[in-house]
Image 1: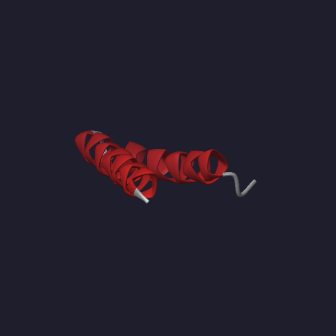
Image 2: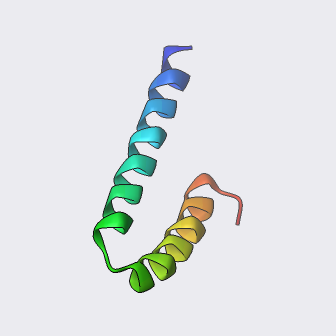
Length: 48
């Protein structure tokens, strides 16, 4: 069970880091980056 918790914490950390990165960019660029990162996140999980 600790492995699942650790994996969950790592994924939450990645999401927070991605959000901070997007917020640091220009708003026009940020919306495009968010779409790209969402697609990458789905591929990372294995849904595509």
